[in-house]
Image (cartoon, rainbow over all chains, first blue to last red; front, side):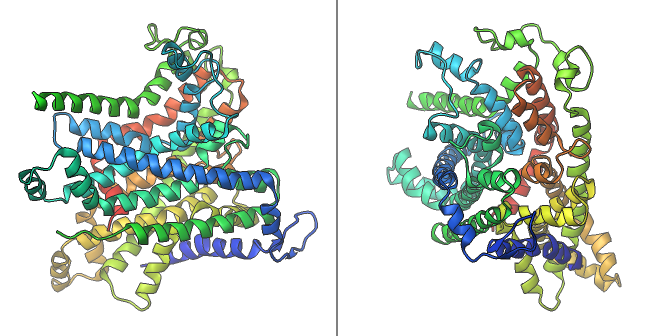
Length: 279
Length: 282
């Protein structure tokens, strides 16, 4: 019964991963085969390429913004939607919606919002007198471009964090809160000293998922930046190096590096952040 | 008094959450019902007063603007349904069989196999993208439904297996044991007893897998980027990238891509929530 599953996993997940690992150390030129061993040649090449180095730095920012904003919003939404109220089911469905939509579609609808000539963000900021003239939000200033691109991904993955926070909140027995209230704790103290520590397992999983997704950000970057390198991510750089630049060796080296970083960071983060809570 | 302020603050905050979650979709819908000159006017139309449907007609190849949107959106809609639907079916069949075996049967090397499958959950897209492209072009499956479905399914299987594994573990084994005592074979027990009671879990896995397939972009961008198999997501990105198609039409196409996931969320959100929780906690 497990044989078909194992065949699929071996052939289309493990075997390709092994290929990536081997070919990252090969010099690959489609025009003059065969490929030959290149040692760390591909790696020195990617580290000496300023565009690729920029994508490393940018991805660091994507992780900072992605993980930080997702956790803050997810916790706030979870706390807000914890108690029952009329229409809660509908509100929950609305909150989940961005998670269910394709990243590309979200990139497209947000790029219209950010549009430099007709965008609603410009229109609203101008009528509030926060800007004096329409802005090109994405493409020139690095941090601003990254933040606004990241925000689209945060919009998509916040529902995941919200659901994980809600699930952890439901496992906290009501007496814990009552005891705190009897002891005279205010709402902020309750949240800081009781709720946040007790939902730590849910937050840890949300953090790891946000970490992996922001390390791999591609769709939003591809759509919103249309090839500009100001806010490029490692994934978009890998795509352009491999499939536009046809530099497969460097593409493999980038892929292997990113795979190792993703696996190590996500397992490491889970180990540090995750602690089982018992009542 | 303080309680009433608190209740109002909560209502306002919930309102903010709704606007945050819904506004971008509303804005695309609003724009898709405007004329191009309304969309480009200096005064922003927050609520379209006379909605028009010509943008939708244009993307399905009718009306005067059809040529502008000649990106084969109708075809790509068929493609995305076939690809995410096909991948969902294949993933479910294989992941359910595997999950049941891992949850209920005893066999050699079970733990090794289990953690091998589960371990691939941590593999990011980077690990397999380029080699899968080369494997698929070696066997001639680039730009075919079969190729893209195989790639999707292999990517979705570990998560589907993990959700179904937790579903089977949560079922009381006594019902299946009773069937075995009554003389049912392993396959009869699986098909006639375990599968029917696992239906809600299967539904949750199916919806989540389908939504994952619907949202794919980089794999089809690399593996099926010609008209015959490219899904709606790839066509939408290229419409956007060409900068010549009017934004009203691009937004209409985005709404078409949103429609099916949105309907699934509003009708079946209970199962989606269960699936997400079963797939990430524990």
